[in-house]
Image 1 (cartoon, rainbow, N blue to C red):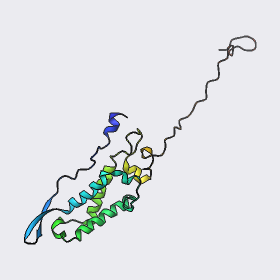
Image 2: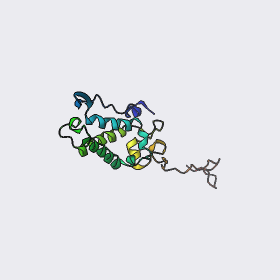
Image 3: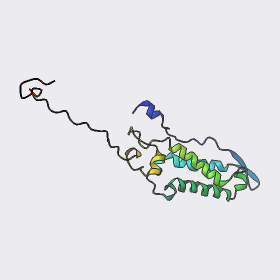
Length: 171
C-alpha cells in the first residue's frame, strides 16, 4: 500500500468534538455549569466513532442502517429537549430533528474516511461497507475476481514446423 492511498484515510481518533459550550444551570440557591445539548450530541457520536466496527456487523438495531442511526440521534435530541434542564441547555432555535440529522451526517462523513482494513489495498470505507452489508468481508468488499481476458497459449515450436511437405521453408 502506498503512502498516498494510506493518507486518504483518517487516523484515530476519528472525531474531536472540541470544547463544550458551558451554560449556567440553577442548582437550588446557586448556579452550576453544564455543557449545552450540542455537547451531549457530540459525545454520543464520539462514542460511536471510537469503535466504528459496530457499523460493520451491526447487532444493535440502532446501527442497522443509516436511517435507523439517524432516527436514534433524533430520539436522543428529542429527549434532551424534554429533559428537566432543557430550558438551560438547549440553544435558541435548536430543532431536535434537524440537529439529529446534522450529527448523523457528521458520523456518515467520518465513516467515509475510515478504512475497513488498511491491510487490503482494495479496502472500502466503513460507510460503504455498512450500507452494502459487506462489513464482515475482508476489506469490506466482495472478493475481487480477475476477469481480464486470457489469451490462448502460443502453439509449441516444433523443429522443422516451418517447412512444407516439399521441403520448402515457409515464412
